[in-house]
Length: 475
Image (tube, rainbow, N blue to C red; front, top):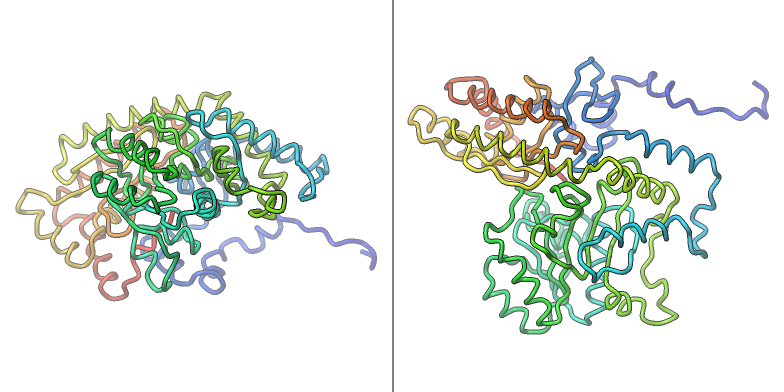
């Protein structure tokens, strides 16, 4: 090699050279505590490949992905159509991030998103790099468009972890230690409609921000009249109605958007996660013309809100390809069909297992909630776990699903006895039945005390009491 010969970067060589060092590198340079928690719960495996519904570990295990990267991989991992589109984009030497231009690809993706948007109010799109950045932008847009200071959000909500989005987070464990956040943000209970109407009539609420199906716990009101009534109250009082579809959108619940289960028509809609097929970071704010005119209100405010990488070529190409796949492969309809099969199977289990208290969800966004047993022989074990920390039983179930059945799932939120299933929409009938059968076997183990699930729970309880490290789940 001469002095003028450029050195090449060989990714395969790098991965081979450092294979097996991921845990150590993360412990030293990234997040020591998280790496230790993964080790404690038996999830400290290095993955070498992801394809469709499956992950492969370095030691050769094949893991079914019931988590989908917190909902990112709706169409499965590394979909060939999206990969091909990205490869074509790289080969074309596209004029990326000119900034002082109107980029064709972002215009095309915006047009596609508005075409599938719920209702008729949404007419404009602002592209971001993530869901949390979309939430940040929505806060700014709502205040600029209305001239009002207050933002109401749901108790238990999750809209992201940057400062503004964190101010809309209804989980105190995420907010702890970060001081005063955004003034004017308040958590409310959507079911308390009279109290909400009282607040909205003050005419100082810029927006209500709603997850149609709350990611933390897979919660939504059992009364289908709550959301439409809330939307009506917003309209009557000049308050913007913002729907966060970052996790629930783009087919996850068996509709393009979860809000369509209640025939909602938001003024602002947030999406991200599945929009690029999981291959490139992307997010988007869809919003009405009235909101647009309130934000970009003069010539000197044409770039009053912007994002350097928001319209980058690879994200736009991946977004266009992902929407194409969702439509061409009828994956939204498949999510609805396979979700019905999963929910039906889980509800059959509920008839046989006393610890299984509630099954809820729509499409392939499903929560399985556990509760106290009635039998005297299991009550002491349940009490022991909950004396240490709520949520340990669900985590023990997640661990048994992973270790024994090679199924990756998650606890649905801090201190919740809820396991959440977010499998890819391409899941087959056989794979749905496998999830149900695996949970059935784990719950049969739970009927034995002492038994493997309770032993795992006891270990977690000890760790929780000693270190207070457990429960660092994020989505």
